[in-house]
Image 1 (cartoon, rainbow, N blue to C red):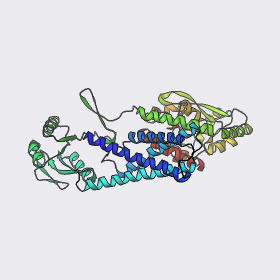
Image 2: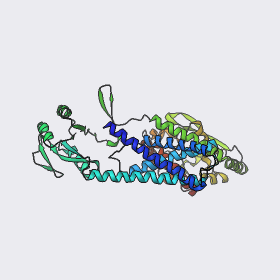
Image 3: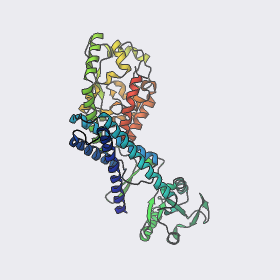
Length: 464
């Protein structure tokens, strides 16, 4: 089986290489009519693009035929991983200062690559599901236990026929033989496992009564002797089963419900993207910084930048930099305005805040006051995407314990709150969005949030 999986993975990689090669060189040849200028340098770009894409696809489990993965989810994984590899390739072009490759050709490379890589995977998934749903490579399944968990499992397998599990029936000591459950009969008692398994050519057994340890252990040993695969449906304890993970410590198997430890490979990737994008954007926005600085100095007295003490990852304090948008004694006046707070929860937000300067009102509307935080991102105090940093004030102690979970990762320049309406949404909803991001973060999610931040900032909705 492992040998077959390796062959499948290698085949998928070769197919990707074919489409990526065509996506890179075909637009190049059509545009230049020949090998084009600086073709050796273009080979370097091609190699970087190929290696980055394959590594990201591998980390997204796109080189395995996971039957439980839907067509839409596989297409989504492909789309996100490809966009990230392309973004890294474009940044590679920028740092090497390669200007011989036409932007039109690059756009064609991206469109052709994205279209072909997603299309062939969708076609492959349809084909595999078609074959499996019609009996190809199906496995005969016996369910031990006809109780709540057994019925729930049978219903799930019936709804996902493309997984290739053919239910033969149930074994249960407490339900009468012949009883139909989701059109499948109880075939006998658990003690009859050997005879039923041999008679019905069972390939896999699901045990849905793990609390009966002696029985489950006995079935496990007998299944092993018969060469039958076995899976155990654990007690979910009323918790979200998507959060479970099985591992071992020594010889002791454990079902892990929650593990806050990060995936360091993914975190390194996130940090590299933070450095590349922040450095590129800071360089690009130098004229904008100068213009905003002049506008602030002409509008009111005081410094251009305002350092605010904020809580970072795991409670570490840092100076969060912003363009100054308020008058110099804004903090002193804040106490007198607390009754005008328009935001629920321990956060102060006021739409017509009298402390905001004329220039400040404009730069806050389009979130330009946040641009200096790109320096915080480059330094490592913040990330491009993450929960917005909390201020170092007495009100931090008013946050509920579950809200402080947002301090488990670096704060971000933008987040889901930023693209969902900002100050127009409630504080509770804001915290829930941060929690959702922490629990479901992927590099692809970061790219999606960054792309959606641009139109959200331009519209200026909910910003004040």
